[in-house]
Amino acid sequence: MKVFEANVSIKVLEFFSTTLGRVNSITELNEIIYRTSGIINFLSDDIEYGELKERVLLSENLVEEPDRTEYGDFQTNSQLAFKVAEYLACQSLSPELVIEPTCGKGNFILAVLHYFSTVKTIIGVEIYKPYTWESKFSIIDFFLSNPNSNRPDIHIYHCNVFDFDFRESAKGYLNSEILIIGNPPWVTNSKLGSLNSNNLPRKSNFKNHTGIEAITGKGNFDIAEFIASSLIDTFQRFKGSLVFLVKNSVVKNIVFDQQKRKYSISAMQKHVIDSKKEFNVSVESCLFYCRFNASPEFHCVEYDFYSNQEPLLKFGWFENKFVSRIDTYKQVGQFDGASPLIWRQGLKHDCSSVMELERKNDTFSNGLQEEVSIEEDLVYPLLKSSDLKGKVLSRTRKFTIVTQKNIGQDTKYIKSQYPNTFSYLNAHSDYFNSRKSSIYVNKPQFSIFGIGEYSFKPFKVAISGLYKTMHFSLVLPVNEKPVMLDDTCYFLGFDKLEFAVFTQILLNSETVQELLRSITFQDAKRTFTKDVLMRIDLLKVAEGISMDYLNSQLKDLNQKFHLILDSKLWFNFKRELTPVSNTQLVMFT
Image (cartoon, one colour):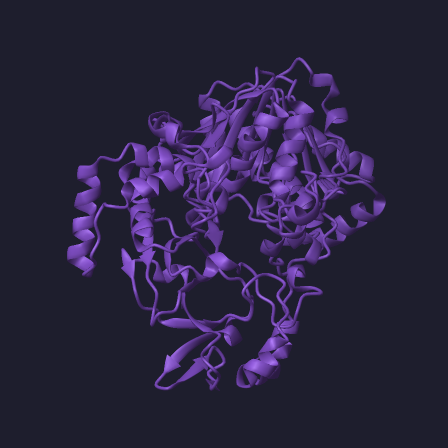
């Protein structure tokens, strides 16, 4: 049954039926509920008092619970909440004040009541009113079943977490043990903004990104990260701990920002959980733990939540570098520097149904299943992330129209030089005009991005930014045309086949593979980015490669792919890798 749109157990209903029959005012009822459960001001006014009496008298009250997952609302199930509290109890925590900043249905509060007898005050904050009632009803149910349990003062506030003054509520507990526990929303500020949610911080760009960073998405952030960072900032000099269920990316960002913020926190831990099992979502998540009032630490130890035995790994800052596996990095960190070659991202057009084609006999077809008859001069072979599986690639399943040779080039030439191509593109102009990204605003018709002289280099070494495998492919021309990569891929371009092959051998070497394992995060949306790849010091790697290893790799490529390669240009290649005046080279890319 539901009261105030909140689930109520039979035991709690019986309690209210009995209690409401012997009280005459909201004050009396609130006092009885406080003595029973510790909840302060269960009802706030006579309107709620009257509605409660009316609802309890109903034998049925069916209210369908809305789906709040789009708001990042993934309620912690009771079993997980109790397992978290049990783990914390084993760490000898003895909190006197417990704060749940987004308490939802109250499962963490119930778990705290079960495992910690030292608690004197509990503060729960929740923006969704039915959940505040469900929390209160669940707490009453707990104490009706456990009347001898420790009964702290419990405050459940219906409030936006960003408007609540946590410091004021905790001002009497500066020298007491505090536990901040919870599961804040798994959603970004831009997502909540699109839903017209009022559960947003007043300053959405809380990391102060400006210009192109904000435009391209770096101004977007996770709400849970904002809440966690704000509470760490508020309570860092209190005695106590913070324990949050969050996405893995939130923990990574907190540890990354620690070098700049230098919060007084230590003992950071990340306990990996099974999100599919616990929340039925395909998001990498964990339990994050840290201690307040300590000398700042800049690394985090990762565990498996269900075993909590030996650490899996340690990530964070090591000698001013942010790395995913500190122990591995110690062995290969000397190769983490600045790439002498500039990595590029592939083509971006945001119009794949029109721009990407497949060949069918003597014509092409597009993603709209239309036959496309156009001049082939602007049509180039295309590889996407899913295509970058082989060691050497010399054919493609897709093609793409390349409208510009560099960003911003006027595209009016297409109409006069390639009339069929222009007619085709113009007929689909609505698709181009509906592209949402601001990068296309006030740009020439049919503009693309990620294009430049480097795109037309005949030989490339490429890697998928989306896949987890650390595999670099050699990309050869197709029908004497350079192959384009889409914007999920990263590549280096070369005029000489030998230079491309030498680079591929270096990148696929165990040295680079170990380096990448130590600086990439497998749960990232993009495992490999330009920032990551630009950290590979190819010159240092080349200096550590033996000629025997190089020649064996060349021999293997010759045999398997019918190439004719040798190491004659190896020393020329190494000279070209040596930057002049410590600047990065662009002659290949």
